[in-house]
Amino acid sequence: MVTLTRAQMKRLTAVHGWSGTILGLLLYAVIVTGTVVVLGDEIGAWSAGGIRTDQPIVPGIDTRVRPIIEAAPAEHRTDITVFANARGELLVFPHADIQHPDSGEPEPYGTLFRLDPVTGGTLSRHEGFVFREPAWHEASALQDFLVDLHVQLHVPPPWGLILTGVLGLLMVAMGVTGLLMHRHLVRDLFVPVRPGRRLVSARDRHVLAGSWALLFAFVLGFTGAYFSFAGTVVFPLLTEVAFGGDEVAAAEALFEPPVVTDARPAPLAGLDRVVADAAARAGSPVDTLSIERYGRADARIRTFHRPPPDGMDFVRTVYDGVSGGFLELRPVIGNQPSGGALLMGLMWPLHTGSFAGAPSKSIWVGLGSMMAFVVVSGMRLWLRRRDAQPLWQGFGRAVTIVGYGLPVAMLTAAHACFLAGAVDADAFRWTPAGFAVGVIPGVLPGLLHRDEDGARRLYRGLLGAGVVLLPPCRMVTGGIGWGTALYDGQGTVLSIDLALLVLGAALIGWAMRPETMPRPRSVAAE
Amino acid sequence: MMGLSVLGAVTVSAVALVRLARTNPKRRRILGLPQQATHHRPLAAVTMVCAPGLLLLGMEGGPAFTVWLSALTLLGWGVASLGR
Image 1 (cartoon, chains in turn purple, cyan):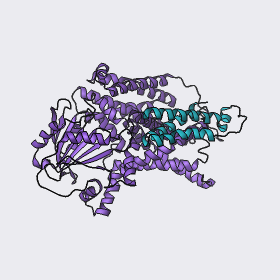
Image 2: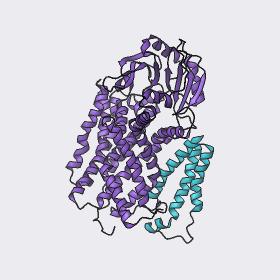
Image 3: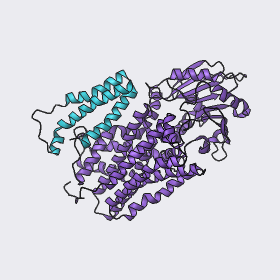
Image 4: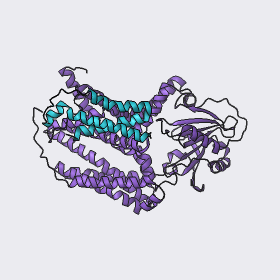
């Protein structure tokens, strides 16, 4: 263990504490939203009214997709993407990359068909720059809102991504400085939190949680920073330096399978056989299918799969678009398996916990909660050392308001999403509006209640009531009932409803529990 | 199958974590418990914590190991925070 002088330790404490104080509330917001969006797919299926099928891209898809492609204008058949939304509906998108008038960048333009995965009937069709309109391709406004809140805090791109990237690096930096400051990390892993509300108790709480969370603070912080910076800094820089700014050349070199150009006309291979073979090779169903250079002899069909039971990385296959023959399993980047591709492939599963189904996702929710606890307990420890000064007392109140107010506002966003759906309003507009409205009940208890313990109890009661009311709100506004969910085998809907009821009851119980420990005065020696 | 082996490995490691916590001298001192007569030798318990994870890594691969490691992180925090 590194031995630091008293002066070095003082400087390190200042760096650790001040950076946490200045950016800690934003870091907390990113962590809390991230903890929720670990269950993003499940929240999507739950809030979108239940899924129709969890595997829409299966053999039999050919007769549904081919007529749409053949009827599409020739200029939109350059690329065809087939994927599913949170409701399990099939989305078929023949398109070409066209320069967007606002961004000046090439963006996918075409007609998006939304199909019923059971009957194959067309539910809707929209033409335009599809990915600029979430309502066209997303089924859950709530999932879309929560993911955006986590990824860029609703700050316009690229600044939101840069901000969350900096916060990811801050998480890593806090881990490093904390590790250096805590000289007996391993020896003190089991030192209990000393009882009471003394300064030393606050320190014990922070140090204990921080010590156990250290490894995953690095993992989650680094991978989060990677995702924020990859598109905003790393790839643009790489494109400029290595490819002279040519984005198409960079994408072809890094992500596209090599192909000998052959523009002769040729029919597309049968998709059913490709889908069946790809699922067997990957060990998991096809998640997304794309057809490149449709109608040409050099066409390629690519499939993307979630990690198989014995793997962590997504699986990507490439097939000949004319013969339907298997060509290769592709790494996430480059043309050959490499250490870089392996690391890059691990980034997503390690950040989201989406590699072993419900167990890994549940644990990642726990890890996220643990990180949030570390951040809040760190800020509380910093404040306890300064709680005699009015300015810091005000900041302490701000910590309480953000700590409880953010989840309150997220809850009102969820309620607004369901209520908007019930009256056929645009849920993609009303969900963020619900969050903005939720700032009022999120802030008021902290501002109006002079006693901080009382404010916290009020917040817990508010949160508990909001959480308990979510399942009935979902059902009353048109969501499927428990009987239907059971009959259709939609365990996600039932599981989330039950989890919310238990969580809400626990919060209400916590709010009603009387405070047993009096707040002591700070002791200088601690 | 993977679920059962991970559950088994986490259980064995958790038992060892509890043992490590209960025999930790500093923890006992803070909790006001009597110090144990024999000298604290945590090597066996540490081995018992780590061995199931290494076995999992060899037999079931990376996903099982990662689930075990992350579950142990949470359990360790829980044991250290709550248990006596």
